[in-house]
Length: 100
Image 1 (cartoon, rainbow, N blue to C red):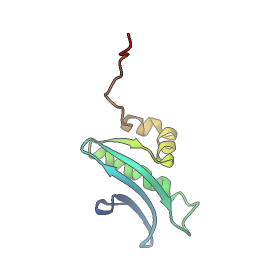
Image 2: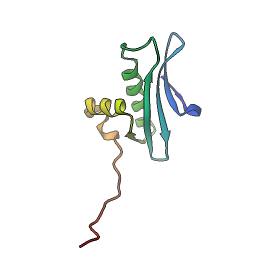
Image 3: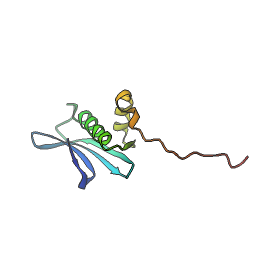
Image 4: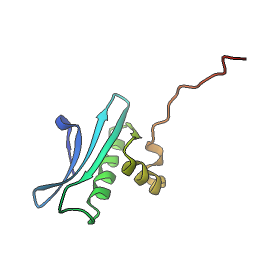
């Protein structure tokens, strides 16, 4: 797994060939995962799961949180809640009832 920061994505390669990507937007406090894709010829081998797990580990090392807009990343975090549930970004904004 490589963080191709200039392209705003994590990359997985198989035998030097790009096999999967996890695109993101980074802010000072979180990483927003927007899209994950396995490239043709690499589907069904668990590459995207490995990529996302390593990407989440990297986000943790940086002390950031994750906002999983990508459905694959969201499902991965749900399935691995014990390992990654603490990384999910929670807004500190609260709404109050202004009609009272």
